[in-house]
Length: 485
Image (cartoon, rainbow, N blue to C red; front, side, top):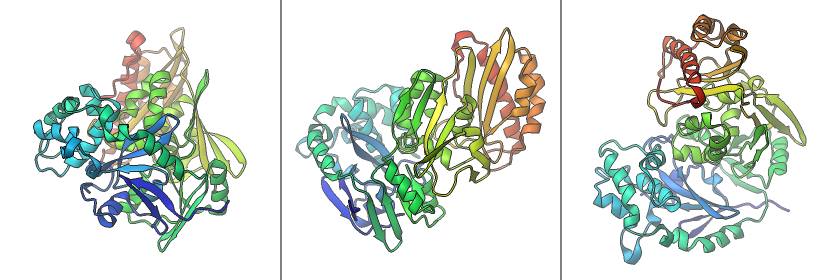
């Protein structure tokens, strides 16, 4: 079957077909400059402030799932077969304001108004799935939206009151859901998409086998899943990313076995959350602190691993659990321990044309203590300064095994092997932990940057191990509260 030469998606009520679109064209620029839909704002251009929030709908087995996303770092080429909803699409009955908008007006949730469309869209996405949210649920939905002048209390009160202004079941995106499903289904022809432009080529593989073939043909391509990193390459570094291979629609399966979970590399943080919360609850708080909701909806576990960042949030706990990645090139696959995948800063054990296909994560055993802590300047939606993950097996009061991994302490996510060795065979006690702390200097020589000084990182890393010990002795709690250390 010949490739299709157009990207097709719905923008509000309109079908969009693009045969000449640059691979680095952001959705925000497309909306504001090409379609004059200027309710979507640019604040930070890096996925932090939420002023550019839109909803993106994707067809699933049970209908269409709408999620908030950042238009500023999202690429137009990621939208094939999807439904994009902007602030201009919101409407109430008989020309009135939409319930979310009216609640924001009545509860004084807007002052300068610049951030307001983004807040409205995030609350709209929440209201569609949870018409009567609790305050913590509202706060979680708004982690990725920043307001500089009004304060959040009126916005939270507005969010609590939205259903007083109308029923989510009567909203257009719900009443027209069957029609939307039909429209999106009609766009799915199962073909590879290849779009050429003056700024380079975009390829959207039909399936995972097609992805393997594409990367063998074009091994130099930039692979884009959620664009939560690549988007910044475009908006902040003005990097040429062509040719681009879009993979966000692939490898989204989650397999649950008695002793492990297998995540497809394309599983987003949001999709993984329920599985993580049920089977590895010690990691749930960490997932709640990865970016804002918009980033969690688009960013993927495989992408967080494949980009090799030393401050990626998921590699340290996955290393501590003994995770493996499945790497694929063509029809050949190989399994690599995650701790061995990271070789040096900017260098991973991945050949040209090879890609991360899945991540196998062993579950903590009943006789193992496990926890993870993240240190940041602000609690929510912030980049890691230091992150520690710990798995310790204790038998008869002695440490039989210790696996300790850190992010932000070296050029890669890295195990603290000297610290581990200092603990094994010793009583699981505060005295043993304190005696092992000097070994950190042998394992790590952290850098100083704007997030933290080297001295702070070292002290924080040591304190996180002590904190893990103290929490592990609190009986069945084994609590990981994920506060700012």
